Length: 239
Image (tube, rainbow, N blue to C red):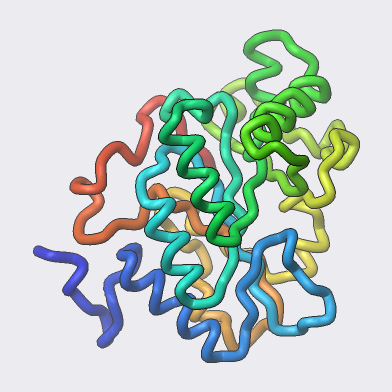
C-alpha cells in the first residue's frame, strides 16, 4: 500500500511528508507563526516553536526543511555529537547542516553530557562545553539553542537529567528547550517514538496560543518508512 496516497478522514496519512505539510499549513492558516527558537518573538501571541531533535538519521532533514521554507516557517534542528548512527563531521553531514542554515533554519546541540560523561568518566559540565564547541566549528559561529538527548542507558543506570544538577545556560547557551518558559508556559507536544501521546498540534490548535512542537524527522517518510533507509538504532531509544 502506498501510504503517501492513503488518506485518513480526507487528509494525508500521519507521519507522511504530505501530512507534515498539511499540519504546518493548517497551523499557518489558523494564524500561527511557526518559528525556530532563535526567531521566537514574545510580542507575537499565536506562535509555534518548531524543534527537531536529530536522533538517528539525516534522511528526511532536507525534505522537512524544504516543506518548512516553502510554507514560510523556520525550525530549530538539534544535532548529536556522539551519535553511532551518523558522523557529524562527515562531508554529507556538514553539507546538510549548511543547507539547513541556508534555508533559514537554526542549528543547535542535542547534548549527551550526562550519559556519555557517565560512561567515559568525564565531567558533564566540561563535556557539554566541548560538544557545543564541536558544532560551532562547523558553523563558524556560536550556537544558541540546546536540548538533552535521552536514551535507554540513562534509564538503566538511573542517570539524572543534566538540568537536575547543573545549569545548561552556564555553558553559554541562550536557549534551553526544556526551560519551563518553553516546556511549561507553552503547550508542549512531542512525537517521541512515533507516538503523539496527546495527539498532534491540530488536535489542540484551538485551545492554546503558544506551543513548543517537537517533531523527530526519523519517523516521517515519503511513501513507506522501510523505503527511507536507516531510521532507528536497536541499541538505543528514549522515552
